[in-house]
Image: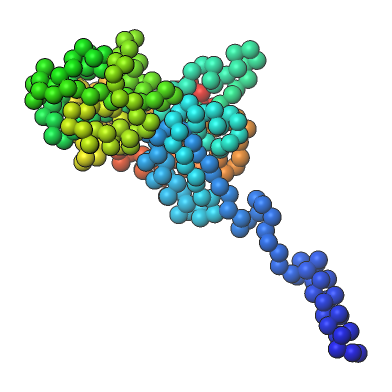
Length: 288
């Protein structure tokens, strides 16, 4: 047999072995060995916690990486409805019409709380004010108290910092603090939790509100009605401004999404959440 015929025979043998499973080929999407990306979008307040959860989950499941985008709760929910993400990060309770179609009674979303969060009021470290009651906090954000000297600090124009439309942190703050009164039109509006912290850090007369997960040494969290924002005050119900942190999915979801939610709500995930936040609240609207 000539050398050319030998090469042709070897080629045919190799092809036959590949067709019979003796060869190797790249895995098809979804097969074992192919990464499956979990896409998250929503509350910037939840970024620190979900990053930690993803890191721990990824250590056990290296082929399931996470992609996180902080765009605010309402935008995260809209991206979920459009199928652009797998899970929305939501830092408030859902409304009835967000959970269920009022005309058909069909479920629209599944709500999975993973922690209880405090919305902490923060000031610059140089500001001596370390306590406020809700009444004066409301008056401050209304613009009716405009100088720190009226609150026992050095004279200086108060710079209240609020959040953008669509922010669940803003919705919770306005519901539990403002009680129907409007935030002053002179308030500085920032687009995310870290942006609020940065502004307060850089401006001695600023005051803002952020998730407990964003309170760091750069700023000081003040007591409200004599109660500090921390895990202990969340567990005993003493802190006034609190809300659930939740993962939200569509009713029809994937096995990987279900597995991540089970991890976040299970012992390993809750061990991470409980380092800072309160425990998962009792049954809330939207839980399947």
